[in-house]
Image (tube, rainbow, N blue to C red; front, side, top):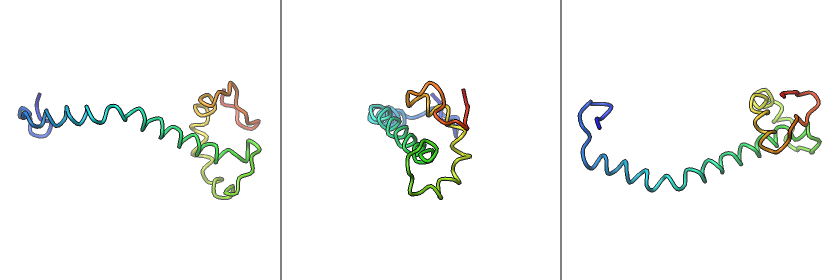
Length: 93
């Protein structure tokens, strides 16, 4: 193994540090990914709540986010278990 910056072989302690870091971080990687996905799902629900018929007290602020959220809408509604788009004015599949 060589160091990417210098091109020299990596030392024992550098390899040990990388191995230990992976050993301690790997079990939590899936948990962090799931938590991030849950937060993204909640965000998408907040943005599209008015379109789904759920009253949203922050509707004025979420209108600006609709163009950004349209790109990820198809993945979101499939992950939520909806075969087709629940919105009449958005047909993504």
